[in-house]
Length: 284
Image (cartoon, rainbow, N blue to C red; front, side):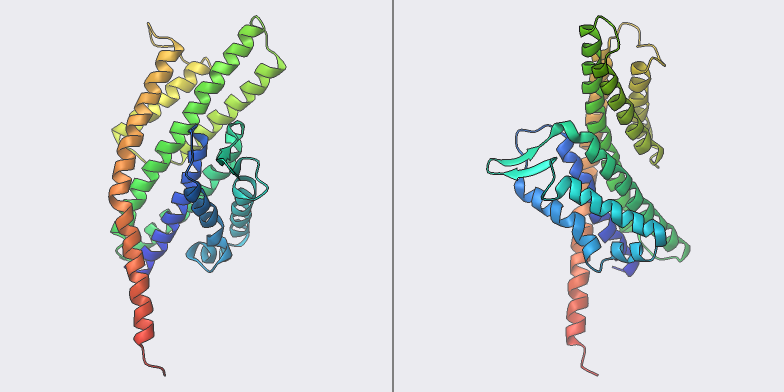
C-alpha cells in the first residue's frame, strides 16, 4: 500500500467514526457501550497524536485551526464527560433525543470537511499517476453510506417535527403559537441540513437521484411549494420516502461492508511490514 493510499485509508476511517455518531439520532432500546467508548476515543485521538489528519490540519493555516477547533468542540459537546447528549450510566448509554440538531451541527460539516480532503488527495494522486484505486472505491462506498444514514436520520426527524407542528397548530385551532414557531424553526434547520448534505453529494446514479428527488418532493410538500400527489396524504408520502431511504441504506451498507474491512486490513498489514523492516535494518 503506497503512502497516498495509507493517508486516504486513515481519513476514511476517521470519517466512519464521525458518521457513526449519527447512530444516536436513531431511537433504539439499547446502544452498545463499547462502540460508544471506541467512537469517543477515535474522535479525539486523530488530533491529539501525530496522524495524517493532524498533519494536514497543521499545514492548512487558519482553515486547519478552524477544523481542529470544530473537532474539539464536537468532542466536548457530544462525547465529553460533561455532555448532556450522551451519558454513560449504570443502566447503559443514555441519549437525549431532544438534542439531535446539536449532533448534526457538528457531524455534518466535519464529515464534509474531511471528505473534501479525501477528494483533494485522490485528485492529486490521479495527477501524479499514483494508484489509489482501492481507497477510491471504498471512499465512494463510504460517501454513499454517509449520505444514506444522514438522510435516514434527518428525514425521520423532519417527519416527527412536521407532525408535532401540525398538532400544535390544531391544538391552537389553526393559530400560530410560540410552541409551533419553535417547532417551525427546527423544521427549517433540518431542511437546511438536508440541503447541505445534498449540495455536497457527488453521486449521479439514478437510484441515488431517485431517493434525493423523493426527499426534495417531501420537503416541498411540507413547505407548500408542491401539491401532494393525487389521492395521497402526508403519511403516505412520508412512508414512501422513508421506505426509499431504507432500501438505499440497506444496499449502501452492504456495499460498504464488502470493501471497507479489506482496506483497513491492508493498512494494518502495511504498518506491520514497515515496523518489521525498520527492526531488521542494521544500525548505521
